[in-house]
Length: 418
Image (cartoon, rainbow, N blue to C red; front, top):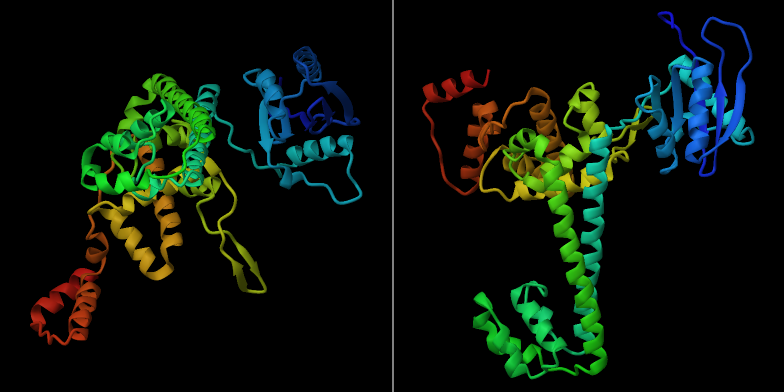
């Protein structure tokens, strides 16, 4: 195939069918060719052979649910330049939509260079994504069961959740298992109290006086058994992920040096971004893809909204949790950054801004293969020492304390700020 040769193909992907439109090669005359294939594996292989016969080398398709994945699996690593595009970019005008037209529009946009490729990680990273996202789904199911057990206790007038912080902790599990076995005496159940809760043993005894019937016992047994099953499944998936994360041990070791980022957060960063972050031109593009940058909605010079655009929901969720953890550190740059933004913009925006900052740091660590070096919690004070001194003097004077500073040190501070 000669250098500079381009023949573009657009695909409109559905659950049971795929409509293809192949344009003539760039610089050659001819008509667009349309064809429809099924979505079974043998149909996709025939489609691939047909594309090779037509000497197609560039293919674009919409990101339609999960229906693009079988097609991508067949065409990946077969010499085609594949683009997965956001459906918003190729949306048809109302009244001028059909499957054939959609496929041709995608092909024409691809040929004209008007499409932005979505990030599709390599197969091993996609598998890690599935494992970790399923773990999140299991955690959500387990949390729902935890709430159902708590509500069941309330219907039986057992107020244990008002005394025990974690209903499924060591004390809570011991009491639940005793209730399932048929024990309903508050005095005996209170013996299951462990740790610091021993100080509240009498209060626990009072909270266990209720109307716990056989119906409640059977429901509790079913819910608790399901809760234990999900706990075992979560541990199993964590073991599988840990095994597959062995090749990325060095990257994970670097990521956990960031305050607020533990092993699980590092796993999610690897699974969502991949180990090779050079697929993003820079850190800002990576943050935009994750949905952690202010949106742009301006008209007639007036900014209407700065709400963050939609992005990778899993990554955004994990990073906001990491930001919350970083904000509770005793010291460090990220803690100082959080409180600095919180003072001006509020708690919610400070969390998102800190999550954005963690993502930028993680991007640079993965790209440059370096550990995190904390600038220190006094970083912003050192940026402008004169302003910091002025602010602190103002606060002291507001308390009624008169402060006098010799001229020379103040000049030194002013010089440092320059």
